[in-house]
Amino acid sequence: MSRTADIDFTFQNPVTVSRIVGSLSQSGWSPLEPLGVSFAEEDEDGDVEWETARPELIQQVIADLDSPRNRGRMVGISLYNSEAETGGLLLFFGDRTQVSFSPSIKRRKLATADEMTDLPWYLARMLPGLYSVGLLGYQAQDIAD
Image 1 (cartoon, helix red, strand yellow):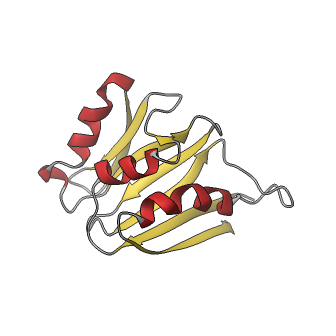
Image 2 (cartoon, one colour):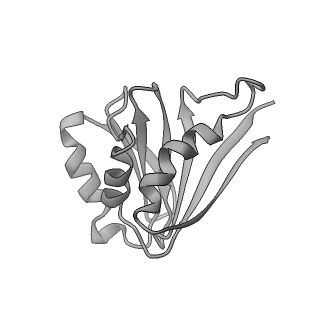
Image 3 (cartoon, one colour):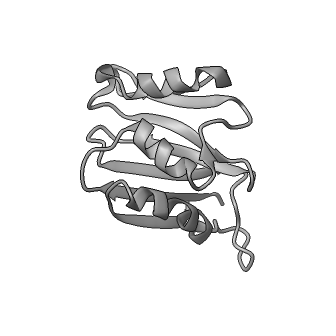
């Protein structure tokens, strides 16, 4: 049996990739992960394809994700906390008031139930920065598929 874990964030106003990445960097999160910079853009057919870029292209990748051509489209960027050696995928939905994080890079597990994700750990390291940019609320879940 597999599991799916994610945290869905709702913001008061539309947010940008740049603003969210900047606010989370204060808690040790970075788009630089072991593979470089992983990102995604929704294409004309509604498909989302993940790609990897070299670390030195990080600012260009973020600017492209925030560009006018991506308005109304889903985009994503990988986040990594190098101190904790964990991370995941951050998806921005078309209206940019809905953002979802899926722990997927060396996912932290609960000590008392290691098949489940330690969502409180992620929340403790994300909420302060996100609250400062207009976070209205969140919904976290870890479910068996």
